Image (tube, rainbow, N blue to C red; front, side, top):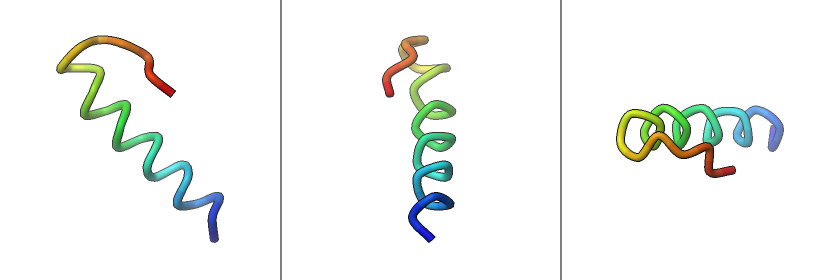
Length: 26
């Protein structure tokens, strides 16, 4: 299930980066 992993990583990264740098890094 790569799709699920991709979404999980993206969500986690965004959640960890948003409040830290506030930059939508994909």
